[in-house]
Image 1: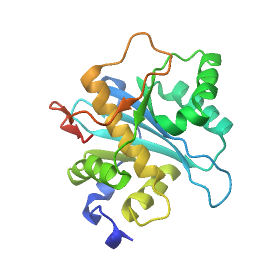
Image 2 (image 1 turned 135 degrees about the vertical axis):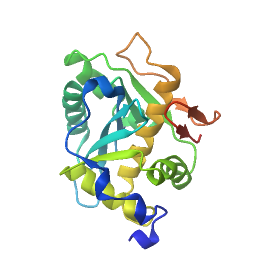
Image 3 (image 1 turned 45 degrees about the vertical axis):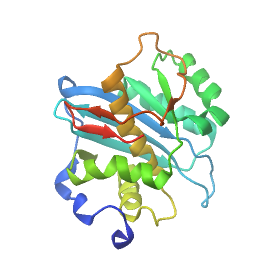
Image 4 (image 1 turned 120 degrees about the vertical axis):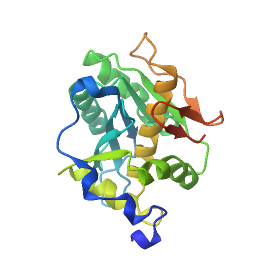
Length: 219
């Protein structure tokens, strides 16, 4: 319940929902993130694809696709969404991705002619600490906009409002990675030789702070 959540109920208001993403000239960056949990049964974790637009005012416009699916479906859904959304970069949790998905997903991308860079985050910090530290300032300042009538966003809201006591936290985990992805490419840009797996980005560096957007990522 919201009473058990680390996130205040006031962070979630109807005014923060949107019908369509802003027009492209307002896009500073488009990013996707993946929490690649595997499984097809009712007890398995969800895999989460998030996609977001960071606009020039520092607002993050977010949609999510949260489902239980096997590795092939994760890859197929990811390629389809990349083709539709055209992100500047994709960010994934590097350990689990490298173990089960990296080569398979790269093969799907190459077959589709995609040249989107894929970055891995090396998750070393405690998950609760990391998610709370990254998301709380943006939720409190209402820096997020949520896609209306999106089943994935409905499930993400359920997981956020109950975090960390709800059974599943795949959505908040992927959203936290999306925010860090925005921060990373705002600070570093996107490498020109796109299309290959990048070495994982470790969390043991200093805070990444983007003054123009107010996005700060605790590592």
